[in-house]
Length: 282
Image (cartoon, rainbow, N blue to C red; front, side, top):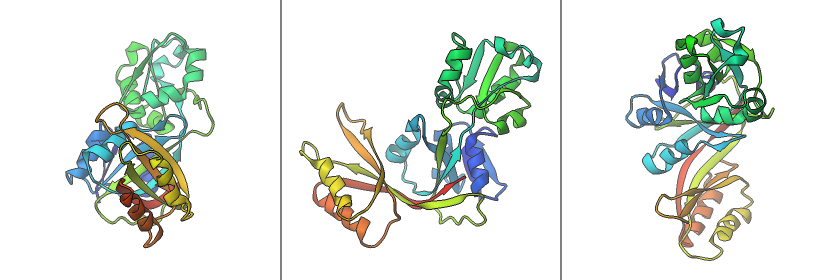
């Protein structure tokens, strides 16, 4: 089985992949769209991409692709603790406080706002496709006085020196990654803990109908189906046009969820189930 993930090597996404799979045939991709296109075009059987961070919220490009660009089910989710470190090329270890630029993924930069504001106020912050890509840039541009925010695996992979550890603002900093595949996937011998099942769906409300969202929530409430998340997203058809992403804390059954879907469709809602899958914790 070939697995694609958001690369380059040593991203948090690769850490998620290694926790779920024992396969060696893994392929990094430069961006989330590249990774999702690969599984859609059957270059790989499985794609693993970030979906949500506890600090910064949803990874919008992942959601947009799942909603607007392709129809590939989510088959699993894994949540990984995120520890961000500041790292430099070894030749710049002694004068790391004098760096002129700091590079990382935009989410990682936002997660370390307090540290950066206090220690590097006024230093140029540059966005990269991933934290590992930032580490790779630092490795290849040692003369430019640039630092990266990335994980310990990236420091090892690209030969960088960690000069400040755990610089993220909040201790509980976790990211959820989703596994996408058109195939049935088994997860033997996982290096993770099972935390339950989820069903994720997209709900589009009937237009100009008062109380429609209340009716949606009621369809699940009276069936005692617990919702762990509800998020509005733009439909990209005009200002004020939104749909909702809803996470249910149970897998698809034969009665409760199908009954709720039938009730919502009778109210004029459009339902698209994005996946029903196990959720794991590292």
